Length: 372
Image 1 (spheres, rainbow, N blue to C red):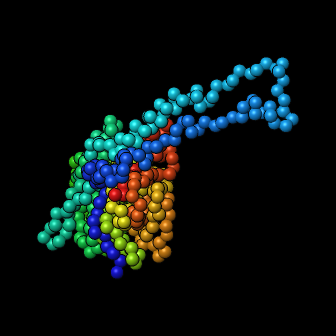
Image 2: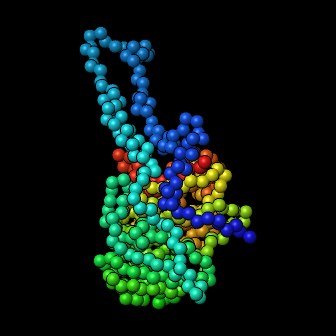
């Protein structure tokens, strides 16, 4: 029988326990929470040696004319660049050393249902216009379910009867589409096709019974190219992914990718250094669901470890495979298992480097796996 995950976590939820980062480093002599990510090469290491004039004169066939005027020595490129380069290194290190930075708001929190008399699980969602802190000091106009980005994680089981009550407190009409989740056509959430738009001040109740496992997402389908990047998206998980024989996990996590709108390049609604690390114990295996709600493809690269790809869009793969970089296109979901057998702080980021770094340091789609 495949092992079923014991605990559901979100990457965003890890930031609530910043003390865990300090615990890691305390066990490493001379360690620092930022050492593995913030060691830029010394500028002096880039300097190269040049043969001297006297050395050239000793070469066969070479002569130095005494009458020839001596050329003025050229300034060393590394010497002239040193002040600016040092400032550049310092600016980049400042951002890295701030990780994980505290910001207001944590998304993707597990949403508890109200259980009705007939066993139906009712979830309450409110869509509203909010201010959201993407990274320290960067506060944007956003849209959110229950005041958080990503929206609350909804977790149910196969066979559950589900109601989701959506109240629209925004200035725009909206709806919810259940991406990758099997529901009746009438509940698919597409305005003017399966329902009328949910106007400001209105409430709509979606009702369906879960018939099969899913690693899905829920998001707006009304002016989605505006509302989804602004924050109206969340994870919707049904049951558990069937894992290969002898694969066991101690926890399950989600990582929602975004790249557009007011939030921009982000993981779980935050931009580095405000992204949350994944913290696990050495030897543990954990499950990660990548969920791409953005408009671009993102090759997600984890330093130091193989990712065992066990499912695509929630469907178990007949032949799981290992990779260190997983290409996640818009709308796709990939499920991977990682065995954390090496302690340390390991960078984890989109490998389209412009999505993860600027000339002033790392930003956007960067976090870390911390193995105690």
